[in-house]
Image 1 (cartoon, rainbow, N blue to C red):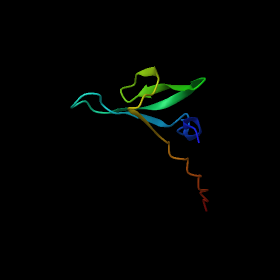
Image 2 (tube, rainbow, N blue to C red):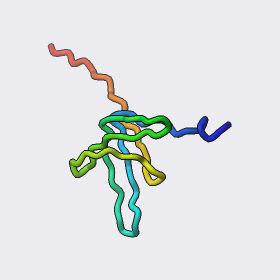
Image 3 (cartoon, rainbow, N blue to C red):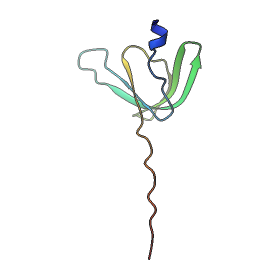
Image 4 (cartoon, one colour):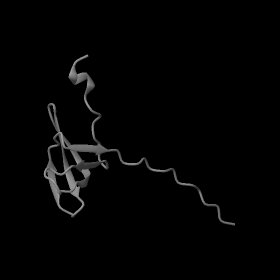
Length: 80
């Protein structure tokens, strides 16, 4: 099996990208994926970071994608 057959799952709108700090004492940052953009073999994203900024982000080895929670089905409320 080649390494391309073992590619990581693709990110989706609503998923969260988490980037670890690059230096000692530097915390991680996270943001919500607003748009998934693809060039052949190079997935990148438009992300709204926790501070409100929006950027185009090309993930590296320091980035992790966390799946957004699936929407819960709505329960019907019966009024009497």
